[in-house]
Amino acid sequence: MTRSGHVYTPKATHDAENLIRGFLKRAYRQAPLIGPVSVHIRFWLVKPKKPKHWSHITKPDLTNLAKTVEDAANGIMYADDSQIVHLVLEKAYCSGGGEPGIDLEVVALDTI
Image 1 (spheres, rainbow, N blue to C red):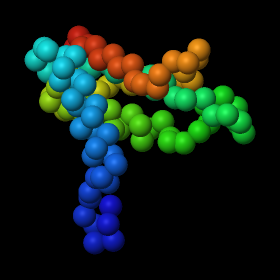
Image 2 (cartoon, helix red, strand yellow; image 1 turned 45 degrees about the horizontal axis):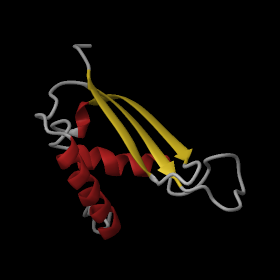
Image 3 (cartoon, rainbow, N blue to C red; image 1 turned 45 degrees about the vertical axis):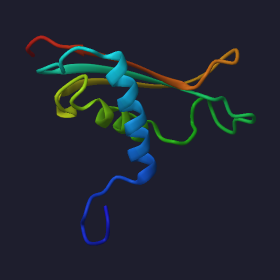
């Protein structure tokens, strides 16, 4: 948010959303889900050479990563991210030379 109160998306975040949106459009060929959904996101990160803290305490922070994915999936996997009523987030390190990436699961929930 700017000092004048305008909300904007930084270019790096906008670019990341567009990249994720492109992957989702190719992978998810159904109509967006309607109603409440459960979302599970796992971020696969490159392990730091010298971790200073326990396990996955590294930047970027998990909620900012999640918001980027949630916004990118709007209109593709669900109509709007306001439909998310259950959210599981994880950071994990790639092992054995694995590539960084994102696992995303969105499940429609019956009426609550």
